[in-house]
Length: 280
Image (tube, rainbow, N blue to C red; front, side):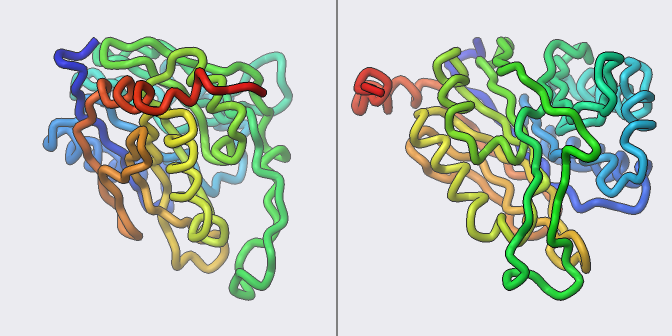
């Protein structure tokens, strides 16, 4: 456990670029910015390298290998910066599935991949046209490109007990309840939340998941509110067990950084032992 149960965490907010190389360059710069502010745990957004890709299957095959372009980049950044890195998500193929998983990889400060989580809840929705500009994408079918995971994942690090989730998972309270029951102290939420839903629900849901489970939540979102077709909300935030927003961003790329004290979890739960009061 980190000395004194205090650690510094960061959520990276990235605006997608036209190439993987540009995305990696921008990601590297923002990781460095977070480390310069003392971050020991850094969380990247969902699909930070390949958003808008035309062939997730091909990418998934490449990234299924440890030497995949982005996987190697992530391992190198974690090792060079000596940080725990929740690497957003990558398409990663599995021989048992016809489509890749949206996989959130966890790297330790030596650059080793020590855990991963496959996104369980896939974003298959149709948005309200009244909430969108004429050109904006209305229907999303994530299951056309990805397989859904099934395993709830809590990883033990030398900083904390870390629960892993992704984007649309945020709407499913039962997942976060299971993570809390498994001992998660911090839950990470790499995301690419749309503007149509994010403006109303993103921060609300981050705070709700933190409050009802009395733990810390780190939401790292993509941002591109002016994109003509797929606008992304941003608003990355770090939330404490009482629902207080410790650090946040609006609609620009950057990093939200906060020092958190894990003792706060026990303090909140002692005064309001919600877990002991559950009857259903």
